[in-house]
Image 1 (spheres, one colour):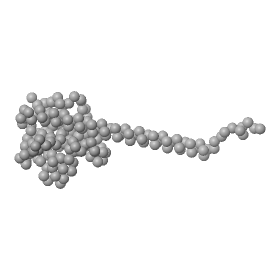
Image 2 (image 1 turned 120 degrees about the vertical axis):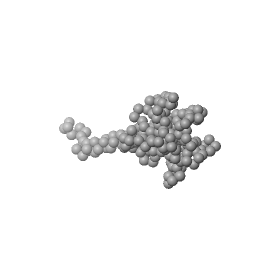
Image 3 (image 1 turned 30 degrees about the vertical axis):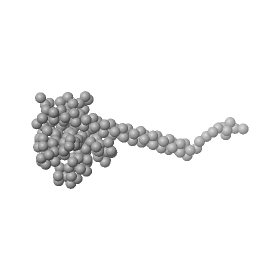
Image 4 (image 1 turned 45 degrees about the horizontal axis):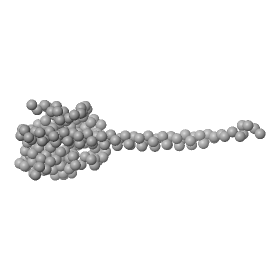
Length: 193
């Protein structure tokens, strides 16, 4: 008997099939890991958005106690509001964490019967939430309320006036934008003495 005939051998086709199957398993595994990582990043982003809204709630109540001039009345004569940037929260010591590379602002609306809406425009230079009420944030997904960051001038529109969030995004305004509350006041962006 020839000792070479009894050896287990693989043809080139079998070796190619094993390589292809291994590659499929590796690609599938990497895809699952990437999806899980992206999902966790989005979840962390939403958690940070809620942390910033919580800080703005404390800021608003603090300013309200002082009858601060930064709280203004909307053009409907009833709704009160305030806008505060992330930088404003930080400079006024409402944040315990440093938010480097984050940009945005929170609009606080106070309606009748202490009915509050906290809406956020936010980016961490990777993701963006553009004007959603806090009640909607937990349900936001990529491309359904959360988008990829593209514009270096994300918060440039924080000017001397701001509006509440549309009803579609969970706020007090209408979906078509025609009856949004308009406030004329600067967003708090500096240290208030």
